[in-house]
Amino acid sequence: MLLGCGTVISIGGCSIPVSTLNATKTDAQAQTSVQKTTDNPSPSILPVVSSSNNPNFVVGVVQKVGPAVVRIDAARTVVAQVPEEFDDPVIRRFFGSKPPRQRIEKGSGSGFIINAGGQILTNSHVVNGAQSVTVKLKDGRSFKGRVLGEDPVTDVAVIKIEANNLPTVSIGNSESLQPGEAVIAIGNPLGLDYTVTSGIISATGRSSSDIGVTDKRVDYIQTDAAINPGNSGGPLLNARGDVIAMNTAIIRGAQGLGFAIPINTAQGIAQQLIAKGKVEHPYLGITMATLTPDIKEQVNSKFGINLTTDKGVLLIDVVPRSPAASAGLKTGDVIQSISNQPVTKIEEVQKIVEKSKIGSSLELEVIRNGQTTQIAIQPAPLPARRGS
Image (cartoon, rainbow, N blue to C red; front, side):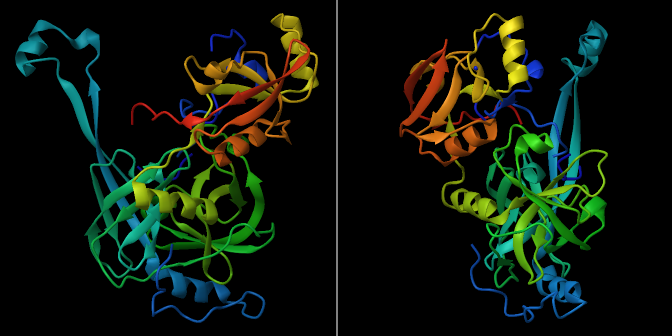
């Protein structure tokens, strides 16, 4: 589940059941199934500590970073229409119209200050659709927050409070992380403010499909540090107290399985949100599945499609009027490479597309009816997700 209390490339009109092929949607139309630049450092930051020579290194990290971790409370109005069976003349006369059911939904999460002038990094799902945002600092002060921008595709958001000379975190590097490294999480799980947990990095490079959030375009860091609802948006720190990831998700019913967005990814998205208020992700408009010998046999026997290869990425659906449709991609095509980079898994296609530039051509090599063909396609901006 995403942790706030409170695409994926989309193949059109094909009758192949996506569940049969374990397909992954790569556009923002998929719905998540889980519950879901630093400036000057603060002058109050303590000296760097290391786990190698200090058995109480966690204490030093908490003292160093704790003042820059915040609690975020968000409120949104949820309106639901009364069911049709209650829509009778008596009720209409009493209410004047069909009475809506309205309630205020409140949730809380975490965040961390990345700029002494009040810029705060958190998860998109913590503030999505919020009509009011309140930020509480560890020193007890509260501020009204303003959402500078949010990106549901990566689940990153930036909010701003009107304050100066705030304590800030130190940003680390998530590219060189190794399983087994010590990590510390600080956040506000289940309303228990400024809770500290520790553990190790269990794995890196967990794809969104690995953890069941197929509408996200992120490779996650896995940790066994305890993460619970309300930790969303809080920092995952290394032994030096540098932020190396942003805590984001847990898997329902699992023990010791927490996931965080690498800070290099989160920071890159945050910079775009601060500059433009939004992030444009490249989009092709396909749904796909990693092709295996078993899937090849199922497709050929059950759906009458003549697949001649059992390696590559199979197109299950092509969205009408999408870049993929305009380029001539079809259901049943098997992608072999993109811009001379071989691909055998959907995650490889997602990464290449996400790193591409909108409007610049990608050269796809596909197998169609046993014949290899080259198709040029220009990614477009990912359409905005409808609804909240």
